[in-house]
View 1 (tube, rainbow, N blue to C red):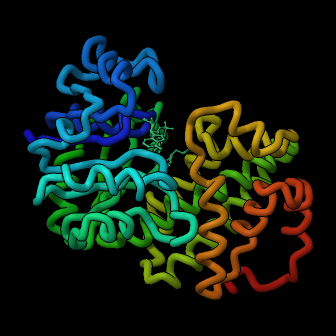
View 2 (spheres, helix red, strand yellow; view 1 turned 90 degrees about the horizontal axis):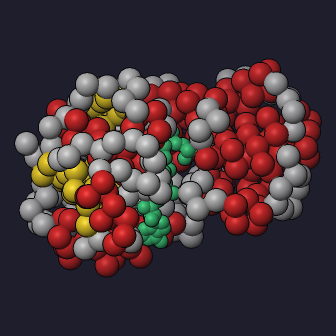
Length: 333
Ligand SMILES: NC(=O)c1ccc[n+]([C@@H]2O[C@H](COP(=O)([O-])OP(=O)(O)OC[C@H]3O[C@@H](n4cnc5c(N)ncnc54)[C@H](O)[C@@H]3O)[C@@H](O)[C@H]2O)c1
Ligand SMILES: O=P(O)(O)OC[C@H](O)CO
């Protein structure tokens, strides 16, 4: 039995805590609010993020980050990407010296254009053998209901990826290993932006031809940038790329697709933010991924257009028309 701290008791932190507990680990979940931590520990339910789902008794919760991390061999982070650097700055002193840190987050930081594994490395000074990411088609509600799913555990040190794989392999969760941290992280962040575009198309009333076209060109765009940053193109054809893209773009459970759908139906970004407390990472990462692509000379029409729509500079209808009107070219260019 390994001791694991999961930092962030939102949808995914809680669902992944279930995966870890089902796989036989002792899990402590950190919640920002004391009343939520108490509810989780005493009633074995997260009423705010996963109501109606019974949590294993081996999950306890606390709002004290030092207590959550004390003695942990693995510290898993599941909070929003854009505030993570600031959060980690306060948490870093409590991370046990040898603990492996795992990012579940799917965003790229605005301004620095860094992936979350890069933020962890910068803030904590940890080497690549202590930093991993887990990413794949893993909608939190389905995972929490123990519906079968697969995912990718990526770490530059393959033996650490294998150790984490064993730790989270459970009755309904099948992890694969990878050493391609860049590819997994970019697949996870980019699919949120593509899901926004797909949601917009759905909100405008378009059907499966439109969504399949956006998904496929979204995968091409993701792979172009990921490969420019050193990723293995096959990673983007796998669970952390195509798999997550399909799940997120197809599912009404996706916050990113839903966010896009609401824009397509005519709501403004501000109205959508006011209507939900859950994070839709793509609404910020469209900007950082667009900038990252520009920095590396990579053509990124979907990230660019989604960024313009989210910023209110063009409409969702303008975006779709612009996709169709772009200069024609060979599919594989
Ligand atoms: N929900 C999913 O299905 C899913 C699956 C895979 C990956 N992810 C990724 O995991 C990350 C977390 O997503 P989530 O679904 O758990 O989000 P969520 O909105 O359900 O929960 C976010 C959690 O972070 C906390 N939080 C919010 N702002 C904070 C701040 N400023 N400082 C500290 N804590 C803060 C909230 O209290 C909450 O516990 C995101 O990067 C997301 O893309 C989500
Ligand atoms: O609800 P979303 O859009 O944040 O997507 C959730 C997961 O990332 C799906 O794998």
